[in-house]
Length: 473
Image (tube, rainbow, N blue to C red):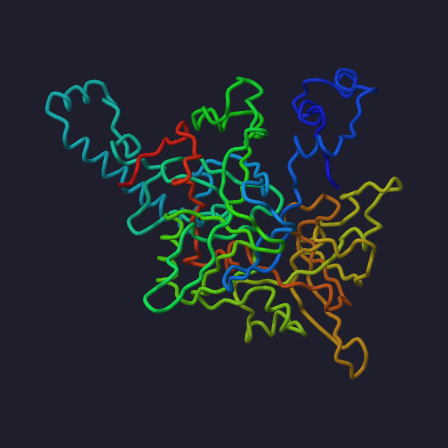
């Protein structure tokens, strides 16, 4: 389903600026002809279907963006609307790491307090005794050159979200730009220039065939201040009520043939970071997740989709004590709690939590699994623990499973198994189970996985007003 925010209807309604009737009366014109002449569309419009997904010609790039038609030199290949994202928001640490950071910062604060008190002169000490608490003691947050919110223990580095790989950015800016145009995130890297001859060996590597520029047609001024967002400071940019209005566009650097892969130069900083990554991790291979740049498994690891292919029969919880599954996966099954609990609903089909007796510490319920319409929707996938299996037919290989069904975050009240109830479901077919990667354990989150934004340093398109970080040189 595609929605068009005609007249800014959805935006204005969300902001409470007007009701439905006012918006329609003020903006709707019964005499307006919404059909455009084809010549007018060609002059004023931009094609959104110049790109189509496909398999990249490079063995390590996974998927790529292909030209769906002939694109002459200088033509717009695709519009690239972007959303500004604060660079710091893509940094994170895991729970154990945060505990280490908090412990380290607490230690640093005590050292700073002790150092400050020791350096007080005799007069200040006397004043401190007279005034009780005395002067405010500097903390690590106030120490010049050591910002606690950014400082980490020696040897620890910030982790970066996968989203960073898809964002445009500049090394001297806290602003990242996330592109969300049709198939633009499938465009892979290629250098702008390559050496065609390396000694006596001929080398014919792919070269970037598109460039990037701001769209004069689609960039919009801020609705509140009237400023061009490219002239705002990062603080102003991030505080805008409507982040839309920033649009770049890919432009053909030469004639591009139908079905030819679209390639863009990610910049020298990106290329250097990738080469360094490959040098340390030579086993890097293709990645079918769409980001085009994989990372080698650095620990014992089996992705969920591989487990799905090889595990025709599921192990019970007891069997897993001896033959456990990899730590990065867990089992889940498609199940709708409300399907087997009609007795918990009132006559008007509203859920009645009081109808469930939970006076005992743990109440066990066993109920047969049943198929219902829409059951295999991903919203019905929930964690489960297999406790038994048996052949569906005597002597047959096809199994039916019994499992303890568990809750997952985000379930509606009627789909939540009440606290203290052990909900056991029997007769579950293998087709209703899935192996699922635990959060932050898939191959793109392994230790050493590649993280680097697409660099725009050499293109001259990054606004100078956004360059708020000092150069590392």
